[in-house]
Length: 359
Image 1 (cartoon, rainbow, N blue to C red):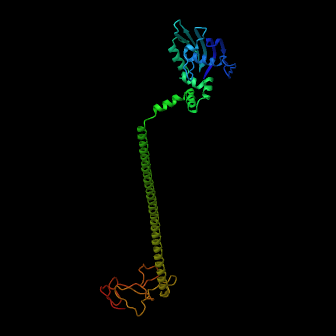
Image 2 (image 1 turned 120 degrees about the vertical axis):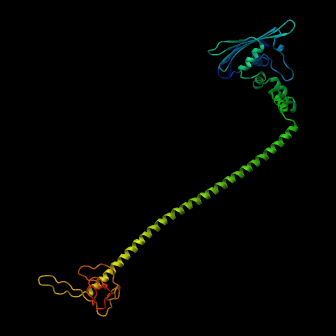
Image 3 (image 1 turned 30 degrees about the vertical axis):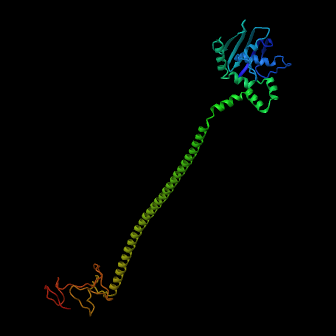
């Protein structure tokens, strides 16, 4: 931020012995009749900063116009703050006997905690002030802060086109227009740039189309991958179900075999019971035993009318084949007796071998 602190003018145009101190904050109003020197105060500030006179519309004021007619010297001192730096600039103009103007300038820069710096040549002072003001040169300062009253009065009576040009000159817009004309490319370059822009748009559209095709391909691949994943998942599920069904089938087969074994055992037990009942129904009465002892059952002869052949199988009274199981004590079984073994068959010779005749 730039803040004015003090302005001292010994002589500049109509000003004599001016010493103004500006407040740190607030606005300053300068009041007075015409030609009293109100605008000259701003010109003194402008001269102290840049060592130039304000530029008019029709003529270009020179430094000689700043020297009073009754004097040969101009002396102005300005103190201001730019950020944390305090600048004290002093400028003077001296007119010699030949009419030549000799400018003088000094600058003192003070910073907190730093040594005081000084510049004593006009060129060095101008460069240092522009540096301390962050690059604000005299044209920028004038166009942003000053508007001459007489220039406005002359602008009011000008034609529209001339008025626009004058306002542009006062605001510094003519330089912007000139810069635009200087930097504006020629027609050939503009046409070439337009063609390049069209080609760029076409390339961008093609690139967008390629990108869209690539995205569509990616989406298609993702869909196919999802379908394959679903198929693999379904296949794995079927394999798991098949394995489970195989286990269940094996368990059912084992259960079936166990049931068959139990049924077979039941049938065998039933047949055994039937044979036992059949054996009980054909068992003879017990013979009377000896006195004081148990009677011993005699073996019964085969029923009449049945043939007994050597090596044959005795049949029960019901006609079913007799099961092959060992004889139980006290329950004779109807088995065929081999002829010729042991004591021999009935009707055979004692101790003789061979087949015997019928009993």
